[in-house]
Image (cartoon, rainbow, N blue to C red; front, side, top):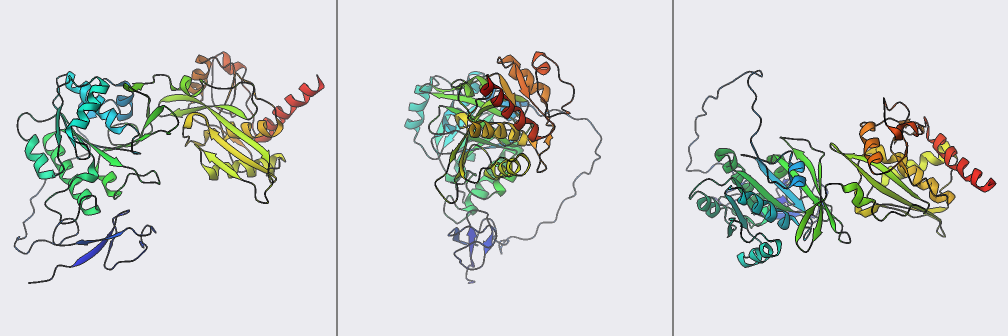
Length: 465
């Protein structure tokens, strides 16, 4: 009898190694190689008793033809439907990731209850909690009376046999993918082989039956969904549920969606009764703003099709250290270093002897470069000790040459700011046609030095008075 070959698979990226090593050669992570056999599962060769099957011809077609919109199941939870692109697509697989305790199970329980009350068959399978624990959560959320079918199971074959009885489920929720295991793989649950094989089996079921499935995934300390990245490529959509422990709001962010936009967000507020939708997140992020403190600038950003206003706070203080501190929360630290370098090189503002702290209020995370102008204004305001106008918003990208570049959706950003009571804005020159009362009071610098001169000029005029 031939001896089964042993291989070592990286639990971070899924790369197969022939021998154990402390560091993965592909992703560079340490202590992630786990020994797994090759007698079955992913990476195994064909069984000796299985004969090669002759392939069948498939039908080839052209690019032109009728196009049908993907049928969707709207949950009725507006922020969830916005993030998914209009609802759950039948026959699709959706992966939801987030930190432990962030509210993933709470959100899915509320969505399952809302869909079940509409007459859909919803099956909720938990591999981490007992049925009694899920019932307690449902009672707290006021969803215990909804006809959601519940089970606590981790074996893929048993799950498929269970849901095969009766009418096909419209939505199947699996919490979580790391707890599932299949008989086709010999490794332990949670390993790359089991996670990938289990996900593949459930996705195959969704495609063949037309049922929508939602897979819940754990998040690593780096903020990425645990397990091989190939699982993210296998599913049709990936959502991240974000939030800070000290804040009561949560953000559902879309990073992949084959049936909708990939840059939408849904905003929720966590309470003892579950998650509540926040229809106007700008009011939430600006609710506790101090209008007279220096170092604060309001950034008019875009998340998909939704404009969001958020406060950017900067603190520039003299440093007693030889190497000043640079701390950033909610923004890219390398982007902050670039803005500081541009301010020093083209505007003559020195930060070499100062500590710089930057924070996005409310724990919100900004990814677009349009926040450059707001960050620069907050830094200059903190260094000079002069508060910026309370009714002014900022947006624009800064280049290494010090020029202020236009960004998209300028009119939508200004419209949202005007709706919230802002009367003026600082935006790049050449932003296109903008209308409204706020547009007539807008300042459009062509270079960053123009904005710095305007802030410094305001300070000199106040000192003269």
